Length: 114
Image 1 (cartoon, rainbow, N blue to C red):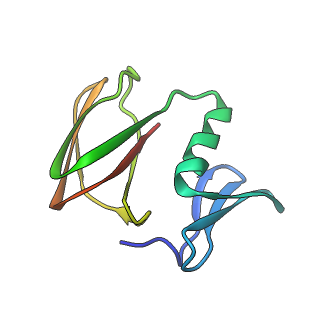
Image 2: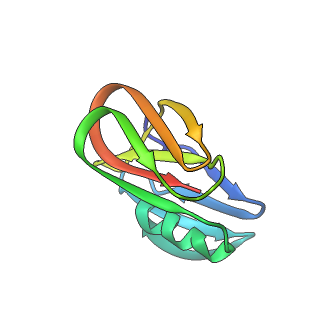
Image 3: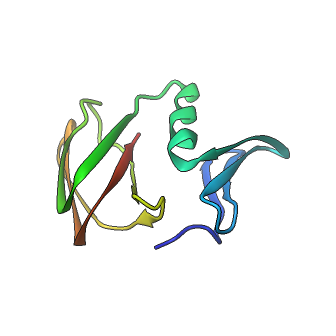
């Protein structure tokens, strides 16, 4: 699944808008454009809200990702493949520090856990 034609609301007035076909994103705070970034840099910038987060780099293509994030909470998860397309899968919360992500097919990419 690709989010290039959708707006993704993250926090209150903070919205991430994909720029069609470029892999870049515009971050909006209310009506002000803050910056252009790749999705990886957008997620990293969200750490300014002082919430715990973790980025999992899945370098080996797999349909099952076992992730130990150490955040001590049942966190939200966003997954992108190596082409920066959002991928939807099944999330199993093992406990407050470990999750298993299961997808229809194997791929590599990143899981942004917050």
